[in-house]
Image (cartoon, rainbow, N blue to C red; front, side, top):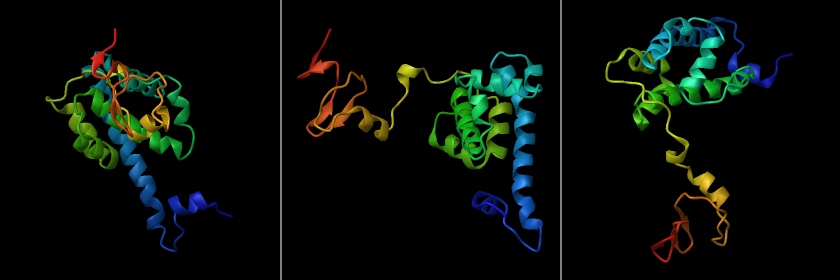
Amino acid sequence: MRTFALFIAFPRSDDQSLATIPYIVLISYAVVVQACLWKFFVKAGRKAWEGWVPLYNIYIWNKIIGKPWWWLFLLLVPGVNLLMLIIMNVNLAISFSARDSKHYLLCTFLPWYALPKLAFGEEHKYIGPIPVKERRTTLLAIMGRCDPLCGHRGHSIPHVHLRGVHHPHRVHGEELA
């Protein structure tokens, strides 16, 4: 008996050619990543051999994009691993000076094209991940930190209240010390 998730990922067909498509996509992605990681590592000031050691290369990849080591374990969870690889691709683009929506979309939907372009393109230099203090927050995260009646919970990100834009370090337009 097949589960629902397996049915979606690997449709049953009399012609087994449809069932091989996900495998071809994943294997080609793995080949592209493996071919590019060593170059990413060299650009980031690491050693090229680190890109060829299984699991260790994922650990170094996480270090380069500024993510914790335990993200390795998230790659073991089915379904979550595909989402994590997309997130890691986008963070790789961010770390290599491709910080626009075009590169984010390319790394999400066409990593076979985007990753080699980032790795071997001379215009992309390693600048590192965005520092935590400079990261933009999504509207959802801002809403989660903001009281419904314009209360203040100690955050420092300007956000929209019912009465207009609120800057936590300003009171009536004056800067707080």
